[in-house]
Length: 322
Image (cartoon, rainbow, N blue to C red):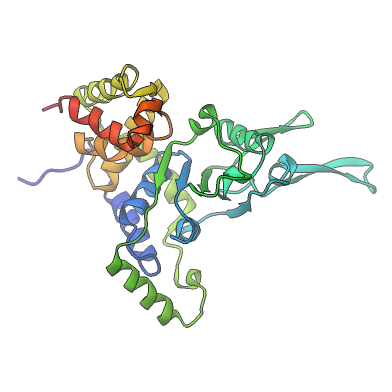
């Protein structure tokens, strides 16, 4: 007897497949990266993308935004960027003899921040307030962000000279930190072939809008209804709790990490066509949820361990619910 979902997620799954297929016209490989972006989007969270230059971080984010019929803006962070450059500013209107607020580029639905660690702390802090509160207050007036509101920020793990590292409290505002790696040799051949076949045309002209803004908002609501068993909730709590007293870690995950794991596991289950969460969903999202929320002890860093190694060790040590 075939299993029937208790909530209607068939449309959601079909929509995510359409988006993946649309992106595949231009983006070669990066399947896990795209799936995690969609997971975060459906979970109403923001994403920090880390990787060396030239591996399609920015173009993937841009093209994802293009598949959805919604607003998009891109902000290049630089050392001289001021908070007003992203939030907006009040300008005096001579005719009306009053100040008028002119909205900045952050007033959009998809906001792509290139090289977020290139701007000073006050500009970063202004952005993080918008991300958390989904509103800003200027001159005593509050302006709300229109849903959906999704921030994608990129940063380069090398060339740290002249950059401003994000403090832990601000990193915690990101639902995911996704690491993007180099393509495999066979994928690189496909990239070269695809670039050659485009004959210099811009990649975004090949991408069509496949879902509406209203569809996205509906799918985000459906994700909230995905069923998660009490055993899976306990499993998440046990893993996050172990990060707080692990010998390799100076700082473990907070309850926000637990909530992020649960929300994104539900979204991933829906993308996979299920209305319930399984342990594999939790294992898949965990590295992206935790790698920017934990801090290794200096001894482990000197031994060459990274955050993902410790996350895998912790996952392996926790019994999987049956």
